[in-house]
Every structure is written in structure tokens, then in C-alpha cells.
Length: 241
Image (cartoon, rainbow, N blue to C red):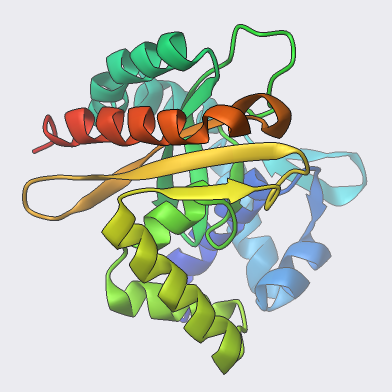
């Protein structure tokens, strides 16, 4: 997406650094984000000055140490995370599977809190992990409740053709009616997941509660896990302003 505002372009670079699996060069950032190389360097220098980026060898960039301060503050003081933790623990203890709190952000679904399954065989998922807001139970549970304009803009960015778009919209309508989304191997092979949106009394979307586990273990009790996840999401939603 092209952002004409310089502040948006700077923040776009910061988000790209956080999402990348490795350090990025200014040229790679410029190319992937569609920004002029000169402005990319200018924004990187600003981020470096504020400690929001750091330069490694060979002109490659990573998020800087000041990002850790922001993350720690969010982790400590986020109202949503604080309210969600008891429900996450309750669902994890009941199901013995991994449970996460997911939020939509800038076309991504981000895991902001996670309780791992106590079982030796479990999903390899991490707090802070981001995935495109398109595939998987968490993404679809969130997409199903996004404002229509925001949802349509995201689908346009992903380049879906008319047939794909129509099929996805039909699936999202079914998810809204059912109250949860389920997926099998859409993100990682052999992983089953279920997710239910967190909607407050005014109809605002705050995030989603998601449960995931190895398909071979969880699919035989899929209906039970879907019900527990939906009930947990409903209890948490009732506590949101």
C-alpha cells in the first residue's frame, strides 16, 4: 500500500522491520514498500536516532532497543491483555492445548498473549508472531467482524479474483452466524485451530481468542473445543467496555 504521508511511511518501515524474519537492507525495504530509496534512508536515520532501529553489519537494519520498552509497556498495561489472561489460563487448563489472544493490526493478525499446551506434542507458536490477515481460524474470525470497508480494502490488497472473493465472503458470513472459525492446516500442516471474536456490547471488535493443537489429537474432540473457545470468548467479551 502506498502512503503519501511521511509519518505513515516511517511507521511502515518500522512495522516492516518488526515483521521481517531477518535484518533488511535499505534497498530491500525501499523495493518492498514502494518508497524512494532516499526517503527510506531518511526515515531509517530518524528511527536510528530514536533507538527504534539499529544497524547491523553490511547496511542491514533491525528493530532497535526502544521497541522493547514499547513492547514491555504494552505487555504490562494493556487492558485487553490483563482482562484476557484469566480466561486464557482457564481455557488452556480445561483443554490442555495452546491458547492465544490475537489482535488485528495493519493487515496482520498478531499474537499478543499465549499460553502453551503442557503436553510434549504441541503447536510451535510464539507470542509476537504475525501472520497475514487472510488464512487460518484467527484471521477469519477477525475478518468476519471487521468493518466492511476495511475488510474490502484488505481483500483488494491480497489480489483475490471475483470467485475467490465471493467464496471467502460466503465463508465469513457463515463464521459470523456460527460464532467461531475453524481451520485445518491452513497455516501449518497438521495443526487444527478454532477462534472466536471478542466483541463488546457496542459491537466493536477487540481481537479473538484462539485455541490450537495437533490435528491428530484435537480433531476427535473438535466440537467440544469449539464450544469451550466460544464460551470463553463470550465471557471475555462481556467484560469489555
